[in-house]
Image 1 (spheres, one colour):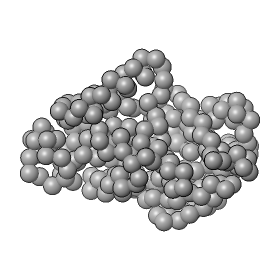
Image 2 (cartoon, one colour; image 1 turned 60 degrees about the horizontal axis):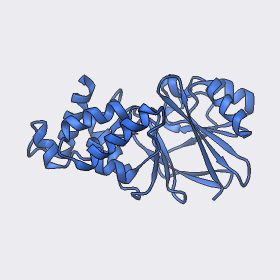
Image 3 (cartoon, helix red, strand yellow; image 1 turned 180 degrees about the vertical axis):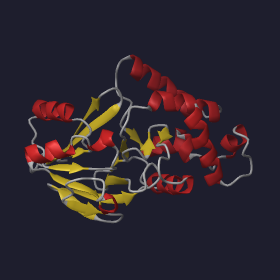
Image 4 (cartoon, helix red, strand yellow; image 1 turned 30 degrees about the vertical axis):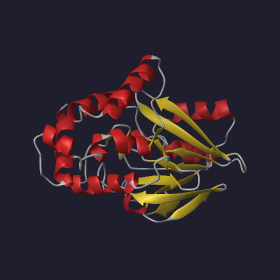
Amino acid sequence: MSLEIRQFLMGSDNFGVLVHDSETGATASIDAGDEQPILQALAQTGWRLTDILVTHHHDDHIAALASLHHKFGARIVAAGADSHRIPHIDLAVKEGDEFTVGTLKFGVFDTPGHTVGHIAYHLPKQKVLFAGDTLFSLGCGRLFEGSAEQMYHSLQKLARLPAETALYCGHEYTLSNGRFAMKVDPSNKALAARMHDVETLRAQGQFTLPSTIGRECDTNPFLRADQPDIAKTIGMEGQPAVAVFAKLREMKNKA
């Protein structure tokens, strides 16, 4: 397989990710929130930046876009719907579009909720998803612009991917997300076992990502809003899954 992935922290909890095609040397950065960590990762790997794949317009994901674009001439791929607030877009994309970085073929999902223009990038052949701030390990993004209904349907779209799909997210939030998950899904044995692993990893200073879609479907309460036990725990017994999801998101905001 020609795919190589380098994951690293930017600041306290933002993740940077480089995606490298060893066959052609093409390298994409998933978002560009901070120039120096990206430059450091490029120097450590010896890779040259050819593309920047933007998930959404928040500053912690695009602050270094202009400088990296100028420094490397990297192609910027982003949602056409956000062309008014993401600068220097070279390739505007939407749901169902495909494009290549070297020999790596990416697909695009529209995933509104965190922002209305949020998109996720999928490598179907390699079974890898770059979800930005839509789906987190044991959590999901806050609803800054979109509705609970939009986010719920975005998450369900991602949850239908093959269980073994590797999940990369925009932030290292797993531990705090997991503590909330334990409160709303206390009888989930898979979640309890996973939290033990998460606490061990974080105590050792290690990343909790990538996760997998299957692991999230088993343990992430925001993907399990249709489960009666969760609905009962939060006082939403018998309510539609999307209403349970909305309540979970509201509770997490206050946690």
